[in-house]
Image (cartoon, rainbow, N blue to C red; front, side, top):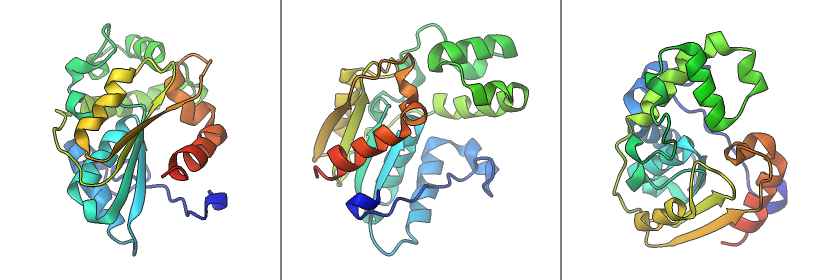
Length: 214
């Protein structure tokens, strides 16, 4: 986001493939959020932390663990942490993907929820166990009632069937300083994938409409 004068840095989530602590991934959303916060502590100035989907929950837990290193939290594509339990998942047919043992059935449920991914289809056999572990971690997140001391902006993706206006606005219970915004009309199916399908447009929206509006 050079036009805004901001440096953008991707957070290497501990435990992901290519990172050095895969075991940490088994400890759940809260532990990963705290690990992210510890990593951010190395920066000389406070940062604006952004997370999408489960990354929104990790970013929230990072902000809860170390608000002193984060100046503002921006999240998108996730229901509020107070609704984090899997019983609140909007997928009423298969709210717990991690429990589906048959690979073909798992992929059918995954693609019904998120759409088909050309990249994942090429690596289905290699990825299925890793994805089950990811979903187990997400589905075991009990949620949180914590209220942050920093400003929080929640972004809803229009036509995203993983969230509703109500579940986005519920983020307001997690911060005294709260705002919500909504990203355009994503006409493609599975609007939850906006970061993959419209990366440049969404980055422009973040820089111009979200960050510069603060």
